[in-house]
Length: 68
Image (cartoon, rainbow, N blue to C red):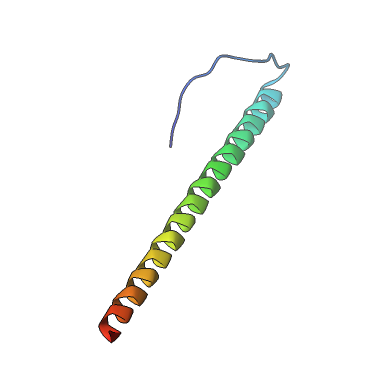
């Protein structure tokens, strides 16, 4: 868990309203982190697919060389 302090960006009339603002900010941050994780996962999947294609190509080349 990451914690930190931030500058107050609004003034509320009640602690309940302050908690709602904090919850909203947390939800926005979670959405950003979700998008970051999805981007990382997509990049990893693309890299894995490229490695798999390269391995298949190398195996086919080795099989062709063995057949000669």
